[in-house]
Image (cartoon, rainbow, N blue to C red; front, side, top):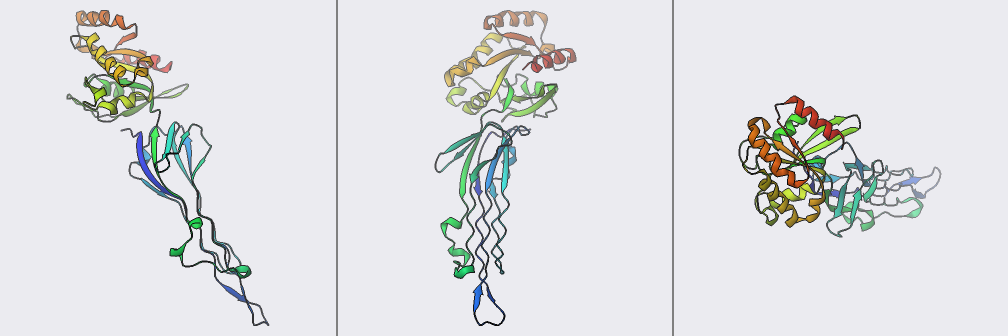
Length: 322
């Protein structure tokens, strides 16, 4: 699936219901008594974290969330029903920013709803002589549910990020290791936004992200630029994919690392494993040269072929350790 980790939405809590305006005349009297019930409270909007979501794709086509209003008060002093509160589920690690006030909250725990927009109070009915303010278009501020524009940012998108220059074989590897179906082609920038895949282990699910390829100068905005580097920040471990058929594997490795340093030096501290992809297309002499050059990195190096089930099985065991 294509990943969405940064999106802006609008939410509107429910308005409080209008107070009832009705009268009851007791038998044997000429006096009428107001018996309109209070309006119901408008629905609140809560946000809650869940480990069942990996990205913000739920909001791709649903960028406006509106909670129900409270019902109008009825006669016989019956209060209107309150609007049913809404709980919006987001991935753990989502930061919610109010674009107006810049107030922010980070969702880090499951089953702990956080109130983001409060519903309006219901208007009093005309019982006890109170006269409700009608019509609805003159509704006072306290009766109107909060409306907000929210910027949602997912701070962690995957356990493992597959990185490298364009056509390094990242998408093919993701497809081979998981059930993901990323777009694959022999041209630059086949992947324009991260694709996710999941490996199920005894300890739980491990999420892999195929991060779009970068070019030299990405930290200055070339190619997919900052977008690429931003996604890398949101992964725990990096699998650095290098095409083993290329003549200078170490130079390729350095190109990516320089972009890390120019954009955010903390990226250099992430745990990293080097995968020499397309091993089935590389002769023994070239592979030996690649391995010798990359020893300078002092990183774990694994030759990989998507057509070799034994190699893929070994790689999955490495992944399970994370």
